Image (cartoon, rainbow, N blue to C red):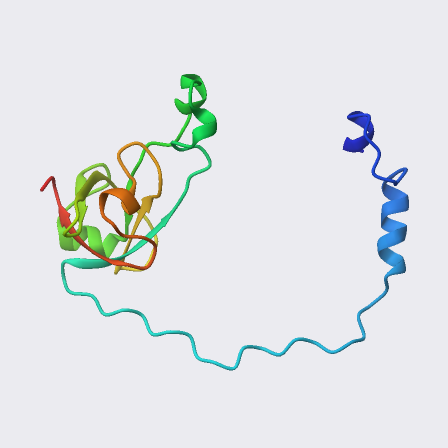
Length: 152
């Protein structure tokens, strides 16, 4: 086991003893949690030049623990704006061509990456070179933003 290789003990000798302990728990016979009793929220309504922003952090981005290590930072994925094929057609862009996502606060321009996803959504990395929507756009996950093909 990994713990043994690291010369660390967590109170178990081997895989068989861990499996034995798990098997001793048996099946659950208590009450089950009830399913939520409310309907999911309705999807926001967007205009023809608007989309819902989806964003999250990449494993390697502009995180503080990478400061001073340019080699690790150089392995990070390049920032892209992920859009659906239908949205790419509306914007008249293809993978690799620029799209601009904007709000009244600012704009981010990245190369498009046509992806299988909902048509009224754009995905941006949350904290990568050239893309920090919370700072630049003043927008986060689920907010409505404008989108256009090319550099604006």
